[in-house]
Image 1: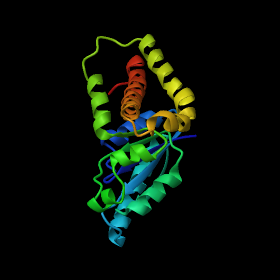
Image 2: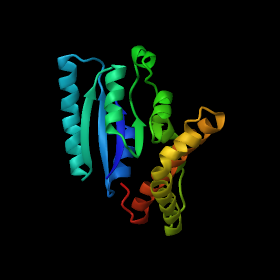
Image 3: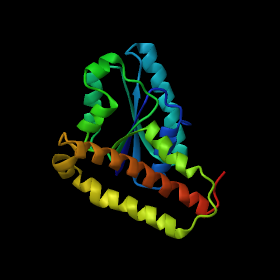
Image 4: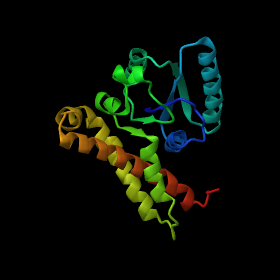
Length: 209
C-alpha cells in the first residue's frame, strides 16, 4: 500500500493540501497518514487535536480512504522520529503549518525535510501553483489527455520511486545545484501530473459539482 503523509496544524479538511491528498488517494491503494503538529504538548491541546483527527478519520472513511494519524508537539527530535518511523512514503505534503523557531533550530523546515527524506516533499504553495493552471476554462477534455497524465503517474510510481534511494545518492542529495534543481523539478512535476490525472476523470464522466 502506498502512503501519503500530510503534516498540518489545523486539519481543516477543506484546505487545498488535504483535498489534494484525498483526491490523490481515492480509488487507489493509498493511505493518508496525518501528522497534527500541535502548538504545545499540553493535555488540553493534545486532546483537542485528537478530537479534530477523529472527525477527519470519519470524513476519510466516508470517502473510502484509509487514514491513520498522530499528534506531535513542536519538538524537533520527537517530530523527526515520528516522520522517520512513518517512512517509506510516496509523498509528504506540508499543509497549514508553521514550524517554530526551536523546530527550525533543531533542523526541521521544509527545505530540511526535502534533504532528509527519501521521497518528494511538497507544500500548499506548490499544490496551489499546480491547481491554478487547472482553473483556466477548458473547452473540452478527452481520453488522450487523461491517458498521457496516467502514463506519467505510472512512470513515477513504477520507475522513479522504486529507484529513489539510488537517485538520492547520485543526484537529489549530492548537495549540488543540479541536485537541488532536480529535486524541485520532481516535486512540481509530481504535483502537476498527479493533480491533472485525478481532476480529469470527473470531467470525463461529468461528475463535477
